[in-house]
Image 1: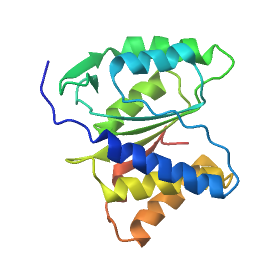
Image 2: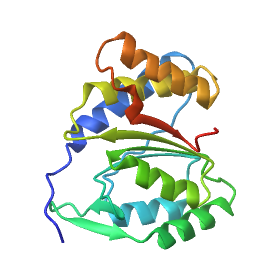
Image 3: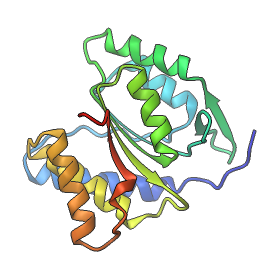
Image 4: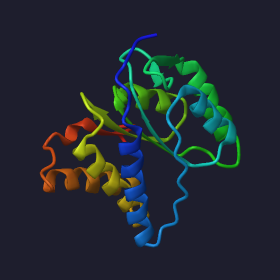
Length: 182
């Protein structure tokens, strides 16, 4: 196990709740279930198969899928296990259509989801901290765009522009929509 700084789960939860509240004001109904991104909870999510969208906020690792264990250490998941989890969910009545990854090394995690069969993944790459105003602005705008029934590509572009316009960050290249031809 490798020690990592604990993820600020409450900050992330609050940002997601605000994004859902904004979508609700637009008439969109979004059921939100928030759980820490521990590896056992990720497995449970796939066992239940409750949703077409997964918002995953976790630590990343450059060489593998990595999740916190709740004690400040990383547990890893093989990409083959992820592929099997996604395949099992996608065979059921509620296939996973979109994953939003908010993480260090989000591109690698996002690619693993795409390789596992998820049609679209939005990657929000962090370099150092999770209390990131730009990522919060991006996610809120992304979900607002989806609540307005925009296409994923339109909502993604709208979220990038919101980050630029609000001058939270000029580094919108850290937000990536996979696959690239999406």
